[in-house]
Length: 139
Image (cartoon, rainbow, N blue to C red; front, side, top):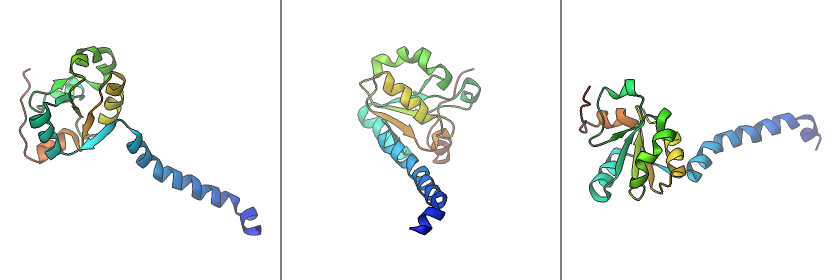
């Protein structure tokens, strides 16, 4: 007992650091957005008519996009979300440049009524690195 009384702050730091390590895992489990790789994205496109949503900003968009993707920048998603309302029965795959903004976009899409929300792991970079097709963007 004297050890606990003298070192309570070490024990507290241990519990806090453990909670900080577990938080991302819990957050992913509770999130409506599921991470998905290139292979599963192509499966969703081919078999379930998935919607592809590019949430990169306009300046990033010039380098190309996934085939038939809809472009709505993350900064405009709340205002333009109604454009996607008619598609909310289909699975939606959200992607950005490297896969870091997809989860935020997915949370916004869940608020718009989408039930099957996926985030492309690694974003457009992973898609390009795998040698998968891109659609050029008209200027």
